[in-house]
Image (cartoon, rainbow, N blue to C red; front, top):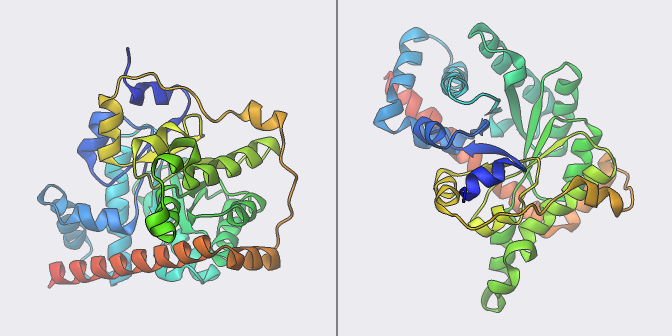
Length: 318
């Protein structure tokens, strides 16, 4: 019997949620995603320090922001030598509420990839799912620059992304689970909220079903997993981005894995069509305490790690 990682590949594109090259070589994902936290973690390892040293040697006089972007591209280029598909490279989270600055930074990243000989079809520009970020993605998509909208916790965010015709969204499972578990406190029943009953799983399924029922081409990539049950319950999602630890667990698990999400099922029972505009987005996001809090928290965490990465680069170049 094949392992669950290979079974999952039959239904879903497997994506590595890591900056670790050896994990990618071992588990053979199609795509890879990165973020400031993952790159910060990777660049502090001896195995990857040479990438930073090389960027600093080749571009010693460049501004800090350019050095950091070149470091991200260095990781992206190495990743694309391993995976056959795409890599997501994130725009600085400090620009999450600035549409024009996000567009400019995305252009800079794409220019660096182009100079490195990487085709644009292999790059996803990763942007936080704020209203401003989604509008930046809309403009970039119109230019043919594919975007991955991250830190997505709610259907209103997903609707706005669909309207912007973004390439891909990354709804977070584990962080939704974390919020509900913390909110429930001592009343939390782990068994009752596992698998298909997990609130994070249910959020992704709702988005997936809505997209498929209404013919929305934007890809759905479940992200931020805490356990195997969450992944197993989303088998059939367009893509799933999975940490090294959970990739290893899937590879070591031999029980049968059945498809859980299916586009035909969604089309057979379509949910009502909903409208999306800025007013509805802001109002409905504000009404959703979980999505509001986790979006803000996620941006803060990514900013904190971006600042740490800046300091590490500054220290390295002396």
